[in-house]
Image 1 (cartoon, helix red, strand yellow):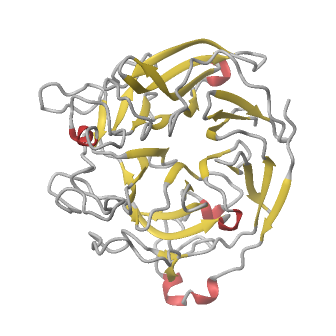
Image 2 (cartoon, helix red, strand yellow):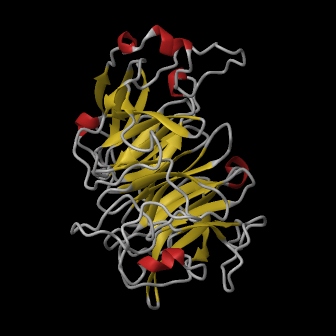
Length: 425
C-alpha cells in the first residue's frame, strides 16, 4: 500500500456582496440554485458576477463573440468558506476519478493502472486485469465511470488508447471490480474507434452514462492535419461524441444522419479534443468541454445530431499564429459554444455540483483546468454562463479530473499525482 501525505490548505473566501446593488439582488441573481417558484424570490445564497472578468491576459485573436457573455464573463467569488485537503500526493499521472458507493474513490493512472483511494487517503496497490494501453504522448488509461447498478454488478467502464494494426485507437472496455478490489474480472473491449492512426495526440477519453442507461464517449480527432478534417466525416468516429449500449452496439434513439455511410453510434460531430462530459443534475442535458488550439477552448451543451464546427469554425488560431481554415467563427448549420476561453485554460474533466454542503454551488459546473492550473467554477442560468470563478489557482497544479463524492465534497486529481478534497470549512 502507498501511504498518503496529507496537507491541508484553508481557503477562506471573503463575502463579495458589498459590490452587489440592491436592485440587482431584487432582480435575478445568478447562482443557479434558487428553488423558489414565487416571482421575485431568490435564495439568500444567490450571487451575480458584476466584477471584471477573472481572465486578465490579452486574447490571442481579435474575433468577436457571437453573443454577450459567451467569453470573459464577469468574475465572482464563493461566499462559503471551504478547505482544500491534499489526501495523497503519491498517485502517478492520474487521469480519471469516480466515487464509489462506499465513499472510496476509483482512479485511473495514465500508464495503465487503476487504484482505489480510501477516505483516509490510503492508495491501494495497482488493480490487475486491465488490457494493455499505449501511454505515449497523450494516450494511456483515461476516463472511467461505474455502472448505475454498481452495488449489485460492480461493473466499471473505462476509455483507453489501444495499440492496434495501423496505429492506435480510442477504445472502451468494461469489467467487474472484484469483491476484494484487487483486480478487474472478465475485462472486455466493447468499442473501438473505426479510424486507427499512428499518432499519440487527441484521444478525447471521457465516458459516462446518460439518463437512458446508454454510454456517452468522447473521441478526439487525433490532432494532425490529415486527421483533423475527419471531425466532419460521418463515416469516421474521430472528433465525435458517440452513444453506445453497454455491449458496445449503437444505442437506440441515436440521431439519424442522412449521409450514406454515417455511423450509427454518432451523437454529435465536429469536436477537436473533448476531455470533459457531465450530465446536468436537474435537466439531464449533456454538457461537454473541449480543447481549442491557440484560443477557443469550448463549453458546449450537446444536442443530438448537432455539428459543433471543428475545424470549419473556431475561436482559436494555429499555434504558429495562422488562421484555421477560412478564419470563420460561425457558419449556418454549426453550433456556437455556450462559452469559450481565449487564451486557453485547457479544460479537462468536469462535473456539476449537486451536494448540500454548498447551496450556492448547486448546479454549478466545475472543470479541471490544465494549462490554467486551477479549477473553473461556472455559474449557469438558462443555459448561459453568468459568472466564472477560479479555485485553487495558487496550487500551481494541472487539474485533470473532478468528481463529487458521496458526502457532497468535490475531489480533484492533478497531473502531478495529487488528490484534493474540497469541502465546506
